[in-house]
Structure formats: C-alpha cells, structure tokens
Length: 124
Image (cartoon, rainbow, N blue to C red; front, side):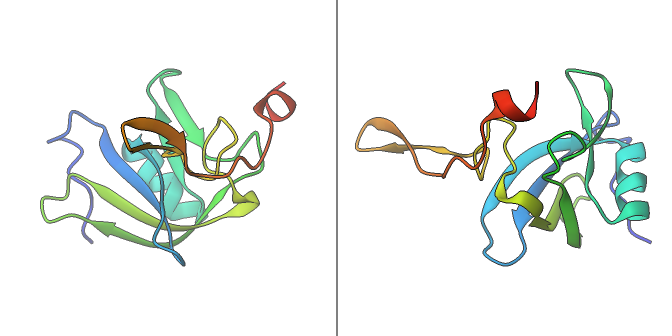
C-alpha cells in the first residue's frame, strides 16, 4: 500500500481537501501518521492541529465533517489530496464554505466564498 512519506516531512504532510463533486479547494491542513490512519479507519478526515499539537477530527465540534470520497498522493508521496463530501457546507472554521474565501481582484481583496455559519454560535 502506498503511504505518505511522513519521515521526509518531519512527521507532518500537507493535506488538501477538495470537493469531490465540484473540484473546489476547500482547505489545506496537515496530517501526521495518526491522522492518516484514523482517516482510513473512519472514512472521515482527521488532521493534526499544529496549534493544539493534537489529532483533530474535522467537524468534530461543528458537525461539518468531511466524508472521504478518494485519497490521492502526489508523485513524491509528500502531499495528500483528499477528495471529500463536505457535510454542512462549510470547511472553514470562520464559517465560510472554503478557507480560501478571499481573492485579489483589481488590486483589492474581496470575499469570494459564501459564509455558511456564524462561528460564535458554533464554537461557544
């Protein structure tokens, strides 16, 4: 079985979450080996939180889990692409559909992704 090269990446491999249906990139986080194994075991995406230094089940608090549709590795096995079904419509902890909710347009930064929920209500 092909696995990410965690050793090459000092234990943390970048993981990109992409909507399996639309191709929209929703977020980028990191997986360690425990997050990788838990993702394979449960069919829901788990990441490693660098700020909390712990395993993080995406949507564990908000209910906006990411259901795995497929997993791909790049040619060097040092980046993971997880094609997902985003439950609840929002991947971003700030309440937006995508963490990439800002775009540079005509020299100005504008919001380009809808807000789905109020984080103050979800993360009390």
